[in-house]
Image: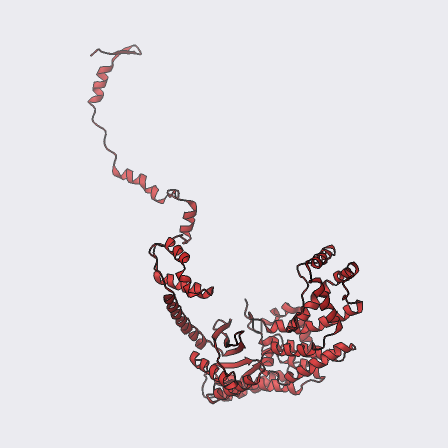
Amino acid sequence: MIPIETKYEGEDIDLEDELDEVAELPPPKKAKTKSKRNLKRPLGVCPRKDTRDVGQLILGQNAMSVSSPKFDPTKFRELLCAAITMHELPFRFVEYVGIRAIFSYLYVDVPNISRNAAKNNLVKMYKREKERMKFVLTSAPGRVCLTPDLWTSIATDGYMCVTAHFIDANWVLQKRVLNFCHMPPPHNGVSLFEKVYKLLSMWGIENKIFCVTLDNASSNDVSIDMLRTQLINKKALVCNGEFFHLRCCARILNLVVQDGLKEIDIVVQKICESIKYVRGSQGRKKSFYESVKQMDLDGKKGVKQDVPTRWNSTFLMLQSALYYRRDFQHLELTDYNFKHCPIVDEWKKAKKIKKFLAVFYDATLVFSGTKYPTANLYFPQVFIVYFTLKKESDSGDEYMRKMADQMLVKFEKYWIEFSVVLAIAVVLDPRYKLPFIDWCYQKLYGYPSSLQYLKVREKLFAMFGEYVSNVPTPSTSSGMACQATQETEEQYANEGSLSMMQQGLIDVMSHGSNFWPNLQGTYRLRKE
């Protein structure tokens, strides 16, 4: 080996000797494992360690993973039966080749369900839901109101549907269809009674019925009388079944208005012919709606044509025609074939008829509500209808007076037999109470404390006393009921004069929603 010499700062260094000294040094010590663990520890808690797709991370954190880790055949059958019921699908839906291909794509080992298996699963689901619904009905704190309805299909087959209305434990209005079945002939009162009573026994609510609402028909009256007698014998009705039968208010208004519209005025006929002319061809429609745009009117409302079997279509036709009144007048000037446009005085007459029918239309909409209780809205609406009929019966317009007189005869037939229980519902409404009933009768008959008002008051205290006596209390409950009834009568008798009643009604009408906060200190009002 040739020695390598390097000169550094005036000294001679032998590189080979230096390498030999380094080789003789001891080897370095190994690092302890504890330090390695210290380096790996932050990796477990590092938020950026997971490098998967951000969308999948979000789905995983919200427990909305795309695929379930485990397939549950029972849950699959329940969801399939629920879909068949919800969308009214046929049972052979589960045997469609395309549907089975989709199921196989989602899960390879999905079990194939036949139409018979789907039917059996649906029957099991129906029985399970029926037991649950029976428990809800029996555990409801109040009573149940029924609405049976019968009709005949195009194939002349009779059907019956029974709907139950009740308030659940959470003070929420519930509506449930208890039965929808074929109703074989004969469709008389006895058959209807047997069908309804069998249904009540099946659901276990024959002792919880408060009232039944039915249309005006002789067979319905017979069935109601038989059903009332049967339930009275079991002591299952309130006030010995006095409030058991309710007549359909919307149906009564329909009959009343149809009697008044039997003789259609020439103004209504002209408007009907005008709308038929406009809708007779596409060219007329186009020219008519071009005129609507020129006058800055809303063309989406459209003109509505009258339907002879529906009285409310007459009101809607007049409402739309009056809105496009200027367009009809413009069409008369531009189209020489249009000869049915009403004159100025006839338009004024049509406006009167529309205003008169609006009272019945608004009342029908209120009575037809399904998302809110309508019992407390009955008496104010009926009072407005009766007051309007009496006012128009003294009108100077011969046609309006004749139409109101025809309606008034039909209306008073049902007004005499009006439902007291629906007037009591207004008394329980803190916005009206009992003085409102007296004020309404005074407006109708001209004097306070009429016989009708005294009847409502008497039935109110009788019902109150019966409910108090049915409360589970000590043996002195009957005496307490009589005492409570007398105290309540004295309290109402000592309330304000008629001027205070009128002022209270004015406050309700003028302030509207501002009236409710003033009552919160006295009444426990439920807030939504």
